[in-house]
Length: 276
Length: 276
Image 1 (cartoon, chains in turn red, brown):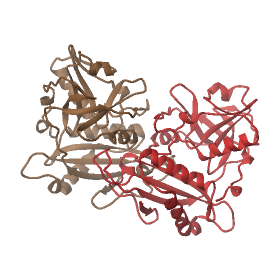
Image 2: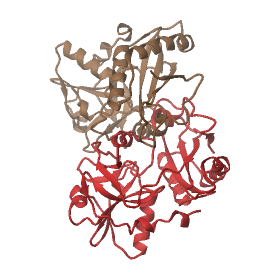
Image 3: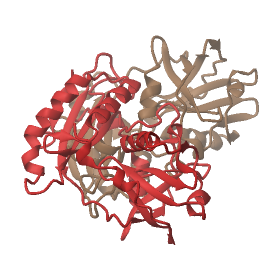
Image 4: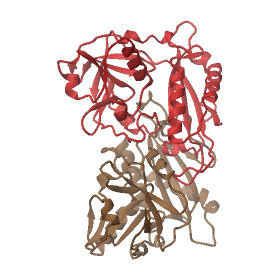
């Protein structure tokens, strides 16, 4: 089991390893009423990636927490007169104890549960984006884990201002990998392209769902590196930001250059059909 | 200014960006009585690297906190009948607020102040070490910053067990860069070798002090990449772990192979001479 903390009544212990070393991971889940969009995928990812970090957590316990969180936060953050929903956040840390970086044995994890209102959704006509000056570095043993080590994304997000909705981060080879809070999906003549799992800081729930949905429709999806030329060149038929709270967001302008907008994929995602 | 938190009476706020995203940095300082070993260097590094992250903090305010921390923690963690001292830890985060990774403007930083007893010092005859299986990745814009993004070091520290004191992490090219909590210093025939600043996850206070001290003695120090062959080959005359709390620790056995032990450098560091 774990120690449960509710963000509206308690903070993190001073010795929490998540707070001290980023020793943990988190999930942000779009809720509508008492149900979550792709809830199982979020909780499965947390259990799986916690296991990769050596943090023990049971799926059944996480499910119980989601139910309790709904009872606690639903009325506060979800308006009855709209279906915009609310956002549930689970932050799981290794807990307290150990000697510096080295965790003690038998540590009990800490789970912080917080919630908030749905953010404003971007216009379906598309958003403005830019390239980040912060390179993305991904440890090959920690790929895809939505860990609490997000300083690179914070530094990149500090570049977002004015009309810019998101910035795209590249790896040391110059390949475009992901946004600060989004994965990338590119439409090309013979299908779709998205950077491969092994390159990703965060392996997004929406990315995986979208790839499965596209393939189920018989479309071809290539998981390969994406260069600036792939996106800015004439063979790009559309670029999308993928995020499990906002869905698929078309990019209409990138680094001052207009991109073709195809909103076909944006409408594939209907959150109300994906509630669990 | 900043919000001040004492670890013996308060935790981190639930919305603290350090706890949520590793958005902050820390210093661990060896104290003897009311003075700190190389205290100015620690505080200068925190101010400088906080500035690199865009977290405003004034040196004079940090100094006042150290004085207050001594009054609060000295009697609890420092025994009067020995000079082993105690350890002061400052954890500075960007504070609370913003939209996800993106910080709000005018955020007030949070400073958590904690303390503990001195750890046991390793035997002067040297320690046993091993190679880590966790590769080290360092963002070129965040090199050297003792940030709260330490998940790689935590994962590597989980490999330390039994008689092993420390494990050495290598970069993607296989160069040996640093231990989980130490920098590396190698003695060779024509001087000393240590990995260059641009490769380091943490630019240690002890590393910098030791390089200056060696150069002041007229010795040659090379800041260049260190390969496994450099350390395990016959031209290695000694390998040391550098850490500002424990000093220079000779490695007598690495990955099952005996290394020559030269304790000359270990005795250069006398903490009682470096109190401020």
